[in-house]
Amino acid sequence: MKRNYKVFIIAFSMLTASSCQLNLLDNPNQISTAQSGSNFIMNKIQVDFATFFEAISQFGMATTRMVHMSGENYTNAYQAANFDNTWSVAYTDLLVNMKDMKERAIKENLPYHAAMTKILEAYVLVSLVDYFGKVPYTEALNTSNFNPGVDDGAATYNRALQLLDEAIKDTHRVKSVNFNPPLAPTDLFYGPSISATTKESWRRLAGTLKLKILLQKRLVDASALGSINALVAEDSLIRTSSRDFQFIYPANSFDNPNNYHPWFFDNYQVGASQYMSNFFMDRVLFRTTSVDPRRRYYFYRQTGTTPTDPNILNCASAVAPPPHYPSGMAFCAVTANGYFGRDHLDPSGTPPDGLVRTIYGLYPAGGAFDNTGAADNQSGTRGRINSGARGRGILPIMLSSYTEFMIGEALLINNDVAGARARLNAGLTASFSKVTNFNISAMPATASAGSGLIPSATTVTNFINLILAKYDAAGSNDQKLDVLIGEYWISLFGNGVEAYNTYRRTGKPSNMQPSLSQNPGTFIRSFYYPSVFVNRNSNSTVSQKPTTGERVFWDTNPVNGFIN
Image (tube, rainbow, N blue to C red; front, side, top):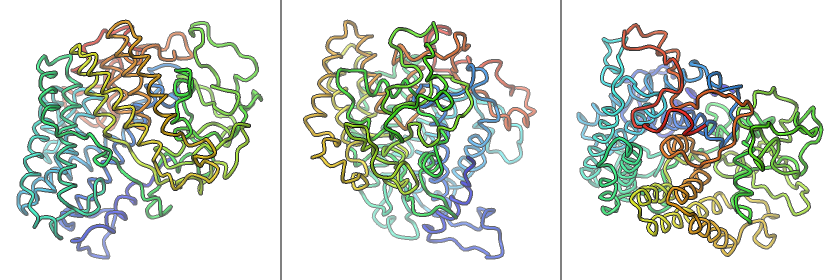
């Protein structure tokens, strides 16, 4: 479904801008920067950033089996044109406005604007490198150069680190006078009001993004782990849920703008438009002897009985798993009581299952809490537009739980088994707290603690102890890393960016569901360049990749067999 993001951006921003003077005869969708106040541009940057993250997250979630990935093989799963809109948002919207905003911040003495812009720019730059490899930057925003060349990925990473250091300095330049209009922007992530608390949150976000970048390039930078240790010792990271970096959808307007969570809108309006991953649901439900208490928040079953009609579920009529599937691997459906989606790289057409397949639940899309009881009789509204939190979901971009898992990985690479275990415990605890307390007012009465559907503190503690016991029983550090990253992957639900990066960096979690085809080709180590870039760029250094097996600069892991 094509979403009218331009209308969302303009309308949402006009509600929050405090210094925007417009000629009412002008087209509001074509506002020049000369007509716009700095606060207006800052608001637009923030909403465009959410649009950018949501798009790239979907690609990462699909490649890592968090949601279904279609196509017969990795080569044709995505075409270059699939990335055109995302690329355009990054270059023609975000980076252009960020350049303008940084110049305005100097002229108008706006350190808060500068800090926010540089932090978001650093995230965009590293994400472009992570997904595409070498991308334009130094020549990209030169208005006299319409055919920019690409920069080395490592150099772009270093520039992102510089931006984060500059942003941290900018936050220290913010004084109380800057919190007052018109100098203070509306903070769509930590606000809306600006305070010393939000300033500290942005500073900690900058530190956490430095942690992310350093961890990401640890395979090619021998000093990265030492720098991570210094960051942790400095203790300027996101370590509490109050600092979580997330975009919250207001969900109070369908038209002009539609500001519902896209995953909610696309799956609850008239029927599901996306498939959940059978493998991911299987891991949430069955990786231990107890079911993960987050499952009723992550997934919403539209039916209490998995279809047996092959016209609805084409593999329902006793179809055997492919011969290359390991014994016990999830296939076709997860359970008989309504958990079913699609297997990895299933290219099948879409049968009439939009009102029965499993869809996003309460977290993070703002959908419905799965209140199916022990008898699997669905009660309440069946996954429609007024269900659950009604689309008031979030984009979980950088959470405190992620920080703990990232630190845990670094510690385990340094052979600190006990320290990594403590971070695994902290990461799980933070994730369960985040998910089980999410939009709790949207839960139906049948989901009360007394009904047994909302997990008790004891249930959560017992489950975490099962995971810690699994970690303790792992025979090697590599196996322990598999446990830690596997839990990180499940806690990342809604964030395909970190899942995709972590999978390529560590090769974990291992034993992912194979594709339905026995020969899917090489796993996507980077995506094709968008067609709007390669087809319109005459620079001799710019050409389409011959294969999506091409690795980005920090990925030195084996070409074949490392991940699949």
